[in-house]
Length: 153
Image: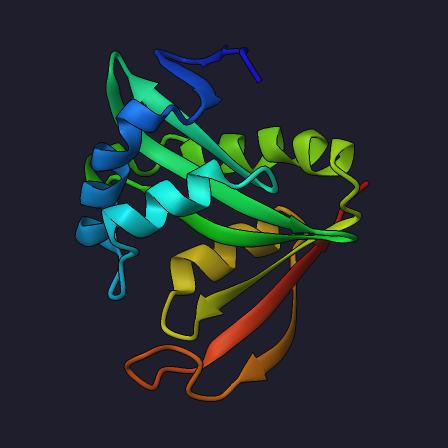
């Protein structure tokens, strides 16, 4: 995947190994249970995993990752730096990931979203994702998760 596409002043492209420390820092900033850098490196190297990054020059400001478990693409993470929110980056990344998942045999995205993450749930609903179930105490702190799914067109 040696491609890059512009989105406004940003470049969106597959995440590179050299960017993983920035992703780890972003995870620590926005997630209650961030994946450590070693875990991100291990995931990134799997042939079934795809991470897309939006960069402002060389700074990773948003990213989206998924892992193929055909016929599903399981969402690993979707994060935007707080200073870069409300610019459509998450929407662009989620949309750009759809053909990549389809090309790898996925027919749907599936993921888990914290019950308290109303902004993410609202964004996913706008993009055609559906809440399909609740998993009680899914997250490490005991918070429930909404299982969300998007059948790919």
